[in-house]
Length: 188
Ligand SMILES: Cc1cc2nc3c(=O)[nH]c(=O)nc-3n(C[C@H](O)[C@H](O)[C@H](O)COP(=O)(O)O)c2cc1C
Image 1 (cartoon, rainbow, N blue to C red):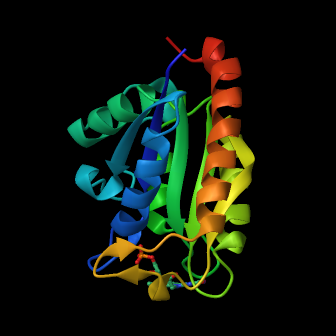
Image 2 (image 1 turned 180 degrees about the horizontal axis):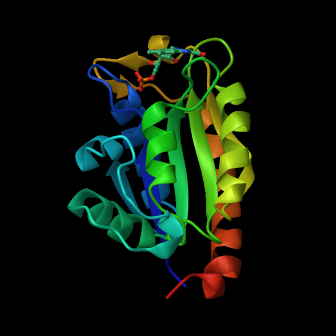
């Protein structure tokens, strides 16, 4: 069974390093036999601060930006968030994008490639996991952590180390296992 993996770049600010880290991880994901791997840039969806009148559980969306985002998320069987830490928390863009939808996220596993300063963004990942479980996602233990990301992006290219490659493959193996097991529970 081939699983559709969406790697979502979760920072949207001008000058961000998210695309460099995301491009590296996408290469690793494409080499994994379990996945049809796609790179998704949250910035492309230009989601405003949540502006739907109905609860996302209803699936009744009035805005085209929500419908486009819903279609993208619904197509995936598993997610990896390429996510920096802002003030020990996830980016507002990621919280907003998660908030827009409900069923589209449910019963799908999610891993993180987290990056930031000294900590490798572990605090923000822990703070995001609670939100994921409310959306009925299954956050993984396995994770890629990138401390001091500013020193590892040169000319727009992320300089991955062996530990990043090894932990990325371990996370992908776990995503494949859970993604296959959970797929029968997906909506529609
Ligand atoms: C608003 C803001 C808050 C930040 N807070 C943290 C933080 O709590 N921990 C950390 O390690 N880095 C923090 N940083 C540094 C970011 O990890 C670093 O700027 C990183 O490049 C952000 O990812 P991006 O370039 O994809 O936006 C913060 C950066 C910004 C812009």
